[in-house]
Length: 160
Image (cartoon, rainbow, N blue to C red; front, side, top):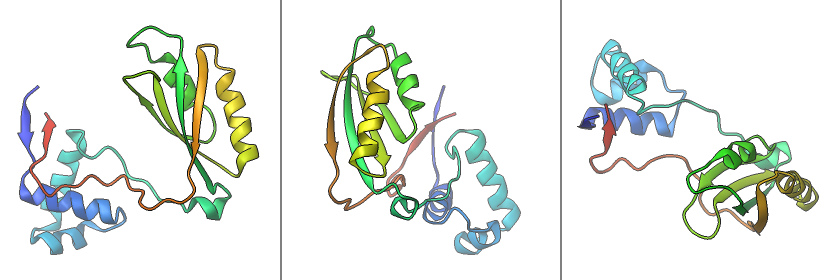
């Protein structure tokens, strides 16, 4: 695979989409000074190249009864490089992120639940996964910043 640079126009389009995924092609076109058809072609190309991987709505977790956030380190008994436990962890309701890590613990997961009772239930489900040896949880008291947006101020590479 060769690396290609994202040009300034793609960077501007990506920034606009990250800030508001519901923006129309016509609005993007006005902001970047292009025809809507040219913007649409660029967006489709970014999707084909795997630079844009999806679109999602952001839900206020408190509004849907998921106000408790926790990060859980998970130590497992599985071979180096094996990620089958991660696949199982990803299927536990309330698990938002699963990260395979280097270090003492194999995984770092981010979860949301309604309260500590819900977290206890989730930890029980995680503990029932055969390869899980132990967990270490940290409960978030207050979230200062949370975002999936990738800063695009500098040149970014992507695989073609």
